Image 1 (tube, rainbow, N blue to C red):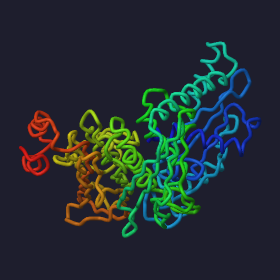
Image 2 (cartoon, rainbow, N blue to C red):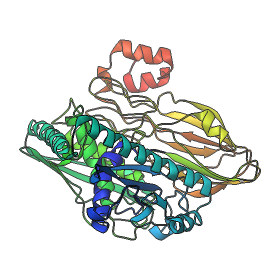
Image 3 (cartoon, one colour):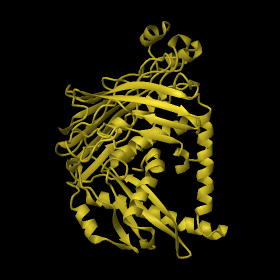
Amino acid sequence: MPAASPASSCILPRTTKHFLAKFPAGTWRPGDCVITNDPWLATGHLPDITAVTPIFHRDRLVGFAGCIAHSPDVGGALWSADCREVFEEGIRIPPTRLLREGVRNEELVELFLSNVRVPNQVMGDLEAQLTSNQVCASRVAEFLEDAGLADLQGLGRALHARADRAMRLAIGAVPDGTYRSSIEADGFDEAITRIQCAVTVSGERMVIDFAGTSPQIDRGINCVLNYTHAYSVYPVKCALDPFTPRNEGSYRAIEVLAPEGSILNPRFPAPCSARQLTGHLLAGAIYKALADVLPDKVIAECGGAPTMRALFSGLDRNGDRFSQILFASGGMGACPHRDGLPTTAFPTNAGAGSIEAFESVAPLVVWRKQLRPDSGGAGRYRGGLGQEAVIEVRAPEPLRLSLLSDRRDHPASGVLGGASGGAAEISMSDGTRPHPKSRTMIAPGTRLVMRYAGGGGYGPPSQRDAAALAADLRDGYVTEGAAQRHYGRG
C-alpha cells in the first residue's frame, strides 16, 4: 500500500537525513539501499517501511530516490491499537543497508522474514519498493544526461525557493494573530483524546502549537512528532497554497510544536501502531482554528479522518497464511463552495482499491459496499456521505480481526454553523459490537458490518439551496425524515 502524500512529501526528507547521519554521503555506492521502520525516524509506526536508494550520475552522488510502503506484516501484534509498548507492535529495523552495491543483505532478510507471518507477501512488497527506487534513480540519471546537467543542486535550490516563496506569500495574506481550537475524539476507552491547537501568524511565518493536548497513553494511538508535523503542515499547504508543487521548501515557513510526552510527541517506547487515529485529527483542529479568519479556504471535519480499518489475518482455503486490510473511507467535510465528497479520504490519500482483487486474495466476501443515507452533516453545503460495508468470513477456521477506528462517540463536526456528520458504527451479524480498537477472532460465516462516518457540514442548514436539497432527496442521499429534522423541509 503506497504511503499517503503527507508521509511521502513531508517525512521522507527527514528520514533520509537520519540515514545520512548514520551513513555519510561519502560511504554510499551505486546499488545501495537503506531501510528503516523506526517510528521516531520515519513515518510513525512499524508497518511503514522506508527505503532510500542513492542516485549517481557520472560517478557522483547527486541525490536519493525513496519510497514508503505499508508492509502486510512486521510481526508482533499485527496492526493494532491495544499494545502497551512499541516492542509488542513488531520488529523494529534501525537504519540498515538492505542492499550494498546491489548485493542483498541476506542476514537482515532472514531476520526480518523469520518474524512475520506472510514472508512471501512481505518480501514481494519490499522487492517492489527496491525496484521503484531503482527505476527512479535510473530515470533521474537519464534526465541529467539529456539536460546536460552535472547534478540536481541548482534545480533543487530553485524549486525549494519557489515553493518557499509561494507559501510565505500565502501566509502573509492571513491577518496576524493567534487562532485557537479544541477538538475531542474517542481515544481509548475512558482516555478521551483532546487536541488543543493554537495557530499563530506573524508576517510570513506560522507556528502551530499543540500545548495542552492530551498526554501520551499506554495504547497505540500515540502520534510521533514526525507524523504530527506532516499532518499539520500538509493541510495548511492544501488550504493556502494548493497549486504550487510540493517539496521541502513548502514547509520552511511553518513551525510545529507539541509538548514532549504528549499524545502528539510521545517518548520512546510508547506504542504508536495506530498513530493515524490521532494524527488524522490535526487537519480538523487547524481548520477549526482558522475558520473565522479564512472561511473561504477551510473545510469541515472529515468522517474519514481518522480512517477506519479492518485487518483480517489467518489461513485461507488452501491452508496458506494471508493478511489483508480493507481500505475504505468515510465522507469528506463540506467546503465553502460545494458539498463534501462521499467516501473520500483526507488528509490521507489512501485509495480503496478493487473489491474483486480484495476477495481474490483472501477468504472474504464483500456483500455490500454502499453509501449511507443521512450520514453527511447538514449545512449550506452538506458533508460527504459515509458508506456501509458488509464482509463475510469464508475461511475454514476463525480469523484474527484487528479493528482501528474512531468517530463512534465524536463524529466529524461541522464548521461555521454546519452540523456534525453521522457517527461510525461496527457490529457483527450475531448482534455483538466489538471494541472499535481491538483484536478479536471472527468465526467462519460471520458478517462484519462497518458503517463509516460522514463528513461535517459547512454553514447553517437553513441556507441550503432548495434545489440541492431536492436533488439529495431524489438521489437518496437524504431521507424525508432527516430533511425535516435538519432543514425544516422535505
